Length: 483
Image 1 (cartoon, helix red, strand yellow):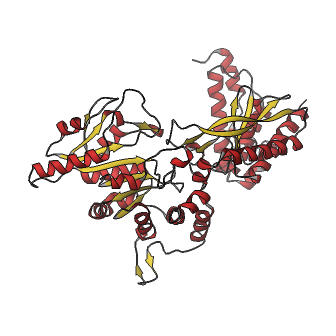
Image 2: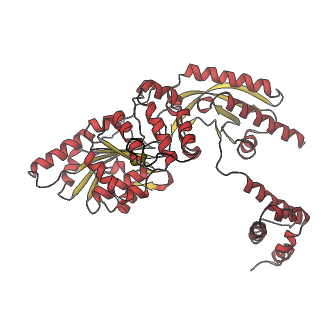
Image 3: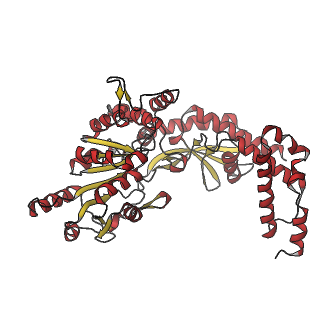
């Protein structure tokens, strides 16, 4: 029961009609349907009632209530999904949309959204075509696969493979690969949802080929390997390689005299590296290498190391891919025209690896030399010194570490340079909040030791420099005007 004080505050809350007739809100009904204005007002009042009953509100002010309603309509007019400046140093930032698309991919999307497109139409045969045709040959040329199918992300790809080839059968997997990635995506849960019976082998840190061999049976559908994604085990560890699983599957087929089909070897590669990136200090197995080592099927993300839009691709044996294309999930999980346009344009850049490294932002950011990063940092530092009052801040260039992000390469430290802001007025924490909540576009930096850091490895040149400079000026102007 509310206390007497809470009851008194509750009685002070205005009725909906009283709010709607308030002079500051009356004009809203000419801009929005009256029901919308009433609903927004009701939600504000409901929130205030909760605050009163939880003893977090000690007074009621009508003007404050009206201001809260008006702020809701300002928020309604502002898009929730918008462009941001990524100064965090996390290259494939899941919360910020993962990979930045290449200019040619952006142009391709712009072209197909203007009107009709050849999504499922062939101008050569003048008949219905397949949406797979736009990317499949490119994927096969790049990876050496016989066939490919793309779905809306790699989680969907994993589900589809398990459902088609292992429903009601056994999928053998190492305990060390039963990962959970972002959004509580757990391999055991996907196994269960797909209808596959998961058979765990080995231990958390060590799995041997004989562990798989002991578990192998006539009901085994898949031998599964899963990319560790956002973690790595070090120390006393051992894992089974793909080529060993291939040999085990082939041996099983020989031992049964061909009376039972061999289990398929499947790798959920996750990261989606299409080219060797070891030259920039990063070792990651490529899709081609997985196929060469004997995988029947490999699935991977398109918006991580591949540097494209959100999608998941499954590559491998043509007969197996054809089965996936006929699976009912293929339609439920298929790509839309904008994603296909971006994916096709991104894949075309991989026909020349030099183009891919230079023109795909993710690859370029991962491999950009530290000397070039330092030059950009010095330019941003000078730019901010010229635009900001020296009584507000000290600006310097510091050594730091960038991250690949996106659940890929968690142990990889990428040397970088940041522009560090030391606050002589205001504070790093309050400025960071301002850059997030009051800047257009929002700017995502990082805090360290009471400094605000802008990592130039993930900035997109002068256009981002100008946004950062203007946002910092706005923060200090607001700060000084409130004094």
